[in-house]
Amino acid sequence: MKRTVVFLTAAVLAAGCGNEAPPGEPHQLVFDVSGTATITTLTCTVDGKETTETAVKLPWSRTFSFPAGTGKHEYRVVMKYTDGSVKATAKLDGRLQSSSAGSGDGPSTQSMNGDFSD
Image (cartoon, rainbow, N blue to C red; front, side, top):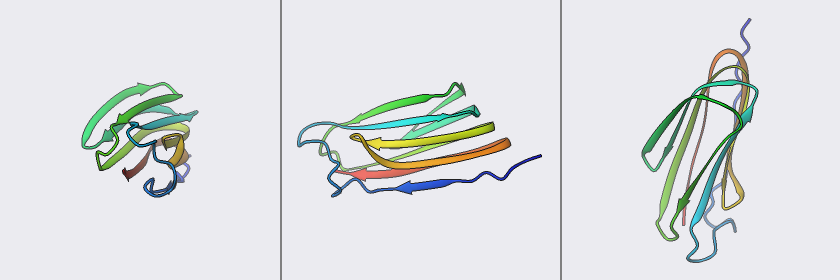
């Protein structure tokens, strides 16, 4: 029996929300993925540069650093998984930037994306 995958995505623009790094300090973007699912592939794209990992064990986390004053940055994380739940978050300088959650039986795909400017 296959369940429908449910997605929840929230995005908050970082600019002007009080969550910027201090002047001159680099910004830290942290992706965290947790859950009970078996991740078959996880593709992370940051500013057009794509990396793909296979057979990812949860929890999974990656941190990206961006020099201050470098303008707009975009990201996307795509998780393909089977049988279970997945929760993903992106935090910019320690504050929630976006999130995504879902679950299902059988093959499922979930994504999270966003952008920020300084």
